[in-house]
Amino acid sequence: MAKNLAIARFFFYLCIMMNEKLIFVTNDDSYASKGFKAAIEVARHFGRVVAIAPDTVQSGKSQAITICDTLRLKHISSSEGVEIYSLNGTPVDCVKFAFDYFLKGQKIDLTISGVNHGPNSAANVLYSGTMGAAIESAFYGVPSIGLSNLDHNWDAEFDTCVEYGIRIAESVLSSDLPRPLCLNVNIPILPVEQIKGIKACRQTKGFWIDNILERTDPMGGKYYWLTGGFNNAEPDAEDSDEWALKNGYVAVVPVQVDLTAYDQLNILSKTLK
Image (cartoon, one colour):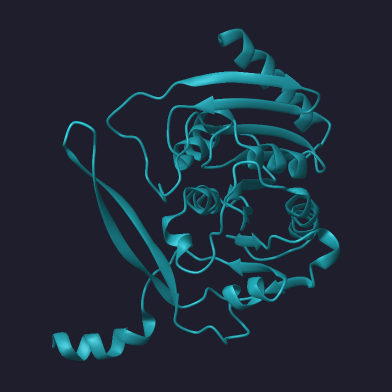
């Protein structure tokens, strides 16, 4: 393991000497997912790729971190320009491990998180491990893109995601957009030729209506499944991500970490006095 890390780091420093871009890739569906392979395909168009993803599915982990257990890194594969590792932690653990240890001191040009199996539009951004990792990357001043495919299927097609992931990543890398920068990108289940375009939009207002299903196992014990559906509070809002996706657009929402409800500050101040 130590030898593999030493070899990897040698190549990383060589990249810096050659002024090649370094792209970091992670996700929440594990290193074995088809979407993760699609994200690596996007990243390798722009430079050397270092990919560290959870060793098991970590969907719904948001900004969760591991603080009561040890972390272990495993080398998965090496190929020309791509190093892949797994970590027994959350998506945010993967970012922290990479930025604070494995790639510490190196300039990371872009983080790509995903491609997620399933949407992260609207309120999903609050729960998503894929977006949790992208947001964490932005904390470090590294521009990040969270990519999500609306298709939940484990064997979903990702050609459209790769095509538009490359387009959006190229725009980010060639722009002077202010930092921190984190983009939440959701891609409809459509072939490339049927996509109407890329639409910059805002997060749709809405919430999940949860339903707890009670079941009985063969031994007579009770167990429960969390299910439910999303309630769109503004289905006709043409500037929202849900509208964009339902109308054939790739939805791109710039995400910020500040959750302060500024419109309530003044009245709250008066109420508290």
